[in-house]
Amino acid sequence: MKINAIDIKPGNVLEHQGKLWIVLKRDFVQPGKGGAFAQVEMRDLRSGIKLNDRFRTQETVERVRLDEKEMQFLYTEGGQATFMDNDTFEQVSVPTEMIGESADFLRDGMICKVMLYEGTPLSVELPPSVVMQVVEADPVVRGQTASSSYKPGKLENGRRVMIPPYIEAGTRIVVSTADGSYMERAKD
Image (cartoon, rainbow, N blue to C red):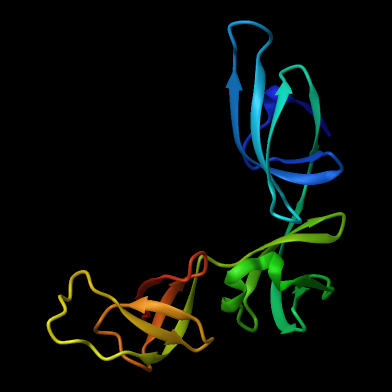
């Protein structure tokens, strides 16, 4: 679907230079001389490369509609994460590099949002948080203040995380899937 550059909004997906780009930022610039233009910051959906480009306000660009489906995570094998559509039971594989570091937090049966373009998966969004068990926690050092000091801990998936001093091995905690940070103690 063609849209004018003036109608570009953050979050739109555009087809530009033969690639698919997600719009991160858009600013309108009206120089003293010449016509106004849209300064657009975009990220390539496949490679993650960022691009800043200018479009004249009358220029048209191709806007792409992505299908968003909730899919269930099944397993990871050989650098590929496999998801299943719960409606059609169709399975799709996604390279774990596309998911990024948050792929460490994938759990059997987890429901994720998969963005598809013409049946090809482009991105995977995990739930905002996940409950994990702490398997290793360093002992508390005497004299540390409890208010601002955190100690290193290791989660069941092997990922290291900074945790409060009162958290011990065997405790279940809530972890942010975006950056792997401690959020709170899990309510059992």
